[in-house]
Length: 562
Image 1 (tube, rainbow, N blue to C red):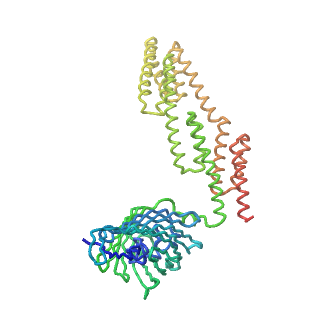
Image 2 (cartoon, rainbow, N blue to C red; image 1 turned 90 degrees about the vertical axis):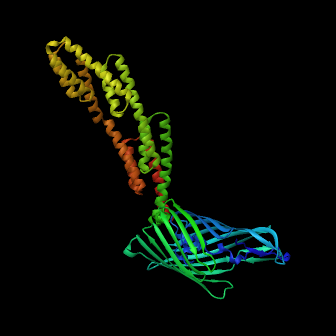
């Protein structure tokens, strides 16, 4: 069993047992860097980038969280959690917390004899980081770090700062500079202290994409560093190969020996491993990382100019207010069971944001509620008509219900019974008019079929033949009159001026919103005014016209720098 044995002298009870200059987390925690033997700094832009160079955060595109586990030797390990949050036009903020724990250390006295006791030693390292591209392709960053050391009932805390810069160069080259411990963390104890050394690192990278696409990516990296108090500079070199954004393999060599690593990339989720081959045992590292959210850097590139940014701010402000109001309206209409009004509000919401999951889901919900309400209403009306012996009208209502919900069992059963009743009426009349039995039967049933299907002109023609064959069946006159009324009603609905006016208002609303969301503010203002000429009392259009005109004036003022 391997144990870390430290000699404890009475006079040195307050001294640190691990040299702060040799803390494992004062170097590299990034697992890609570990797999390339410490040479990856020029390419690092993930959640652990700040442990190499905080300037790498300036190139971070999406939110990312990472977990790392690094066993050192028996009962000693490092664990770390890191998070990177890209901010629109404001760089990237990073946070990490790392814990080094060594337990079961055997205590010996000044005579080198075991005391029979054990103790533990631990470090907790918290780092707040920030990186930003102050010029496209050139980034700077800074780390603030706080480290706590606890050993043998002795605790000490130290803080420090790092600073770095990174650049994307022509010909697929990259460069990265890091000044580590610019402000040195100093651990103070009763009889002395210890600090982390100043360290300067320079990293270079070169990326090759055979075939000119993302299927295969090769990255070559190199790093040179000089540490305060060191006799000579250190070095590292490595390579990484990424295949179809699914598999990655790494290898490298430094003054401490070779290293290798690999990753499996599953969409936004990465599983990573690295191994450093030392003079003693190999050191293994394992990590998981997950990316989430939109590509913030891509959004910035799409709105690089000042005018585009101002337009986006104006659009998002008014759109956000409009969507919030329309959500409230929709919920109120649903609560009041005014589904037609709810659909109007939903339609307006989708005009502002046609990809809105909320409005799309509400649209499906309201359609479902409206469908159920409509079917229930038609069934209720059919029951009243049946009770009044108006079987054909009941048949029509039930046909409408089945058109809405073909699987409705109640409507299906009532339709079958109503049809039987109507057919029985036909049978009674046919018996009474046996002379023209065949003609009456054929035309009566044909008229019923046409009527229930909404083909009223064909129904009239069929029942005219019934009347000609059997003047005694005066009841068909009522059916003919109803069919004629329905035809006129349908024509009126299609030609009414009110219907056309509502269609025009809806079209102008959607066009005005679309023009606004595309940043065409002047066109949007004209369309709102046109809508108000059509509907002068439309308060919603008045509010949006006033709001758009006000925001556009502010946009022009800011664009001119007034």
